[in-house]
Image (cartoon, rainbow, N blue to C red; front, side):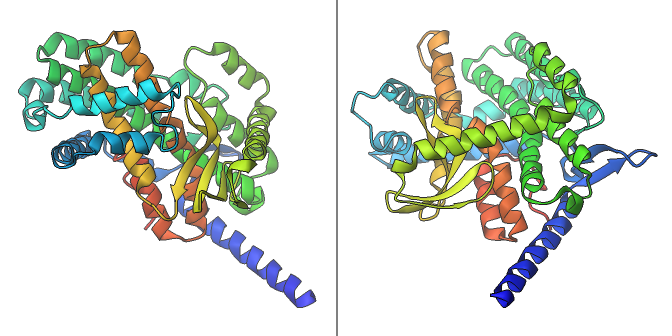
Length: 402
């Protein structure tokens, strides 16, 4: 027994040493002259900004789906099954929204992708937006993922949404073709969202380290770690929620830890409430993720985010026997977000359908930063690559450490 205890201690110590080394390779702790932590940075996020990788990604995805629509007679049924395999045609309240997803994809079938993306007017709008958004990103310094010495740092820097608002108005004035205008408007919004979600994704990576490893091993004191927690959650406060910003500033030493452990308890309660769905509940990976077996499949589920707007079960983050399932669903839903703009339905219905589509992936993707960090610490490069694929963010180019 003593030998086993010693062996476990050695394994734990080795794990902490490796985590510390990985942490130091990814994150940079910045201190002032008095030695106090003033920021946590990830240098890899500060790279030259270009919209080109996203344009290439969406063009390829559009052409791929157009080809599949022409080749597969059961394309519509495949989309329905992908979104709700157990409830299609059963009168579920989300069935109408699933029909909108299918219709949205079909609306993309006849778009001349090359003509849209090669349009001089389209290129002008995108290049103008690229410069303005790049300036806004530089103002914030995208490498900063926590600023423990400033309780209003992120709240005062909600600038990118202003650039999007300007760009959408600019596009409406410059573009007369509906396919070009709709596509440009979609690109403008999606690019800003993906740029913004990089920081949130990496903050969830940082939360994984803060939760599972002693702050001393990571180079922080307890009070510094608490304020880093607070800075992470302060960055999530919407620009209009001044009352929440005031609450964070007034309780800076405990704001973040209260948020974190409150979310942890809710995640645990969600697992307990859904335990009947799983034939086996295995390892709890961290605050957000759990290994389970469901329907005979080994899965990793997300205890923080629901499956979707109309389904409160934990979202599936990864299926071991079907690694591309989550990625494909997300790609379809992202493209459907463009397709819905072409449907002949009222704008408020388009908004509801769009929100339904985004409810499957927007928040879920961000939380998966904590899962990525788990596999980074485990030195599991294969799973890091899988998660990067389903992250679908071409702007996070240095995600996997070399």
